Length: 79
Image (cartoon, rainbow, N blue to C red):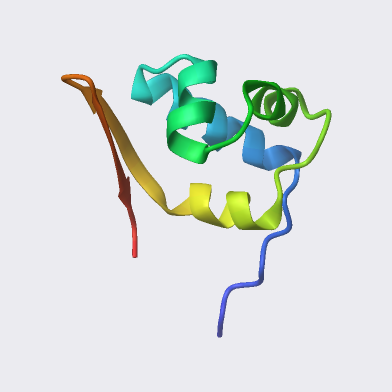
């Protein structure tokens, strides 16, 4: 049986926060380099002020690791 589609909810904040923390990037850097969004948007996602769009939520759910070393940022996704 296929898993139900998740709609973006406040529960998505914890994984997002963990991904940012583990990456070692600031919220501004993560927003710009990893998700291609404005820092304010990512801060609003984290605060719960706005929900994370389904497309961004689905993509973030696939993130295994964000490696920010040697001036390069590599995002590893689960298939």
